Length: 328
Image 1 (cartoon, rainbow, N blue to C red):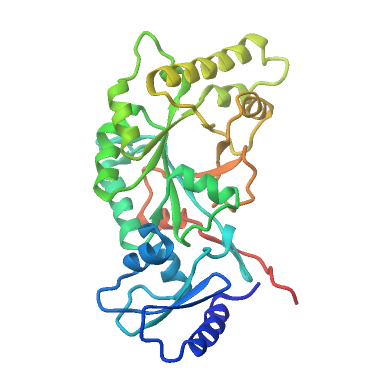
Image 2: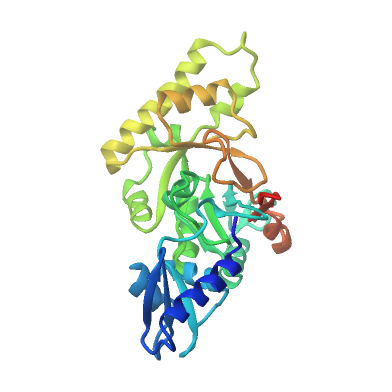
């Protein structure tokens, strides 16, 4: 693998030697690269719009040139086709942490839950330290080896009651402009006696919160041996997932594509559910980041506990795994 710094140096030499002193913003292209001289008024975002047709891709220019801002007269190389899908480098590979909030609270006596103030502090930490909070669609494209994500990317998920997420997490996420995933319990989705407020859930969905599903029953069933695992119990779980999918189609015109389960590894039941309902991914509980080649039925999510300090929170954000990938 060619290191980015060597690529930049080589392309700079070739392109700028081809174009002389280069007084215009754009020089010639070479194998998917464009050399430019920054003009007054240019920013990383405006350059991304001009050359990559997407302001959110400013990070590609930033990372490739190892800069955080630009100034007039500065020479840059813009890779038109992106860089290093899957986050592969000669020194290892990128991992994307999925952080999971299982219970939120405003009550300081509830030690097992994450306080709203703590959630606010953690979201501010992500913003101030240059983290890029991604959507579940971006995460899926990364796993499919279709795109490269910024180095400090993270996916945020919640598993608490939908009303708690709306009252506590939703305002904080809106403040920072962060997307997230809400894994709703399948029995809650399909509860005809006390249905969720679809107006509220629709509002969150329209504002960056992807709605997916979870099943706590899977954990209970995992503790049973094959003799205890009755057909009726299995059928109950299958029925709740099937019903929840129908309800989501009817209420929100949406397919449930991802499943969260409270185990560190998938058991036979999880694997069967993923296969039967054609889930695109299933999220386990494991404190590690996810490379692009993670198995889709055992995507790791790191649980953020109520007693976490900011340093403990930071340690949950595993971004890179060192492996020697270059040829000797």
